[in-house]
Structure formats: structure tokens, C-alpha cells
Amino acid sequence: MLAALLLNTLPLPPLANSLRPAFVVLGVIYWCLQAPRAGGIALGFLAGLVLDVFKGAVLGQYALATAFIAYVTIRQHLLVRNKPVFEQTLFVIAMLFAGELVIWAIDGWSGKSFAGWDRWLHIVTGAMAWMPLASLIGRTHDPR
Image (tube, rainbow, N blue to C red; front, side, top):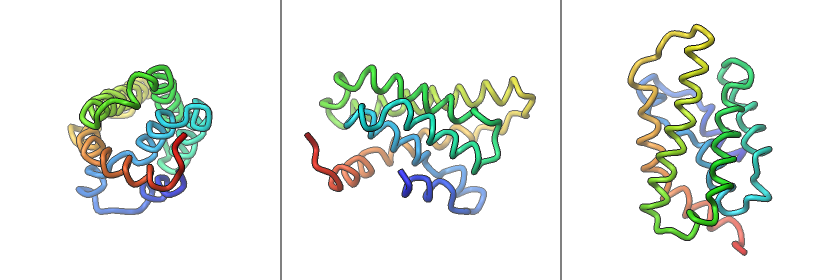
């Protein structure tokens, strides 16, 4: 999760920044699928709070979104973790979209202007990054 946070906070040019996958959210999804007791909703909430601080967002905005993603992922982990990678990728797309929808709603309620269509690009890049990231992280621990 620390590596994901580092990848999320590295400064990039504006175009590359809008194409960057949400590494922290992908990490939360992975750990909630593979080890729901180790990952858990607390991991999602704390990771979201760290994102709130680093991105300068409304405090609790990313925490709510990642905790929601962690909750849904834990509820569905028995159905999703043994599926083929394509079906897992569809689940990841749905979770990334749901998280971005929560963040978009909070931005609207807090009076922040709509950022444009590029705020949704990280859903596509996150889906493309899911398979390599899941296999890379899967090599770092002993699955039970």
C-alpha cells in the first residue's frame, strides 16, 4: 500500500496525471479480495484519509469512497476472487466507477466545479493495470 501511495503522489505532467490509475484504490481492492480480514474496511478508510491529505480534497471524501469500495469488495470477495481475470476486471471497473461516482457527488455537493471528462480516464487505465498489478502483488506474498 505504501508503494501504491507513492505511485499515486508522484508529480506528473497534466496529461499523464489524468491517465494515472488509482493505485491506492486498486491496492485496496486487491487486499480486500485476497485477504479481507487483513485488508478490511479500515484499510480502505485509512488509505482514503491519506489520499484526502495528499490531494487536498474535502476531508473524508476519498475515505468514504475507498471505504465503500472496500465494503462492497469484501461482501463479494468469495464470488470474485476465483473468477477469471476478465471477470475480475469487470468487477474492478464497476468498483472504480462507483468510487469515482461518490467522489464526483461530494465534489458537486461541496461546490467544486466539474473537472471535465478526463476525471473518468483513470477507470480505463485502472482496468488495464489490474491484471499486471494483481499478478505482481500476488508474487510478493504466500496465498492461503
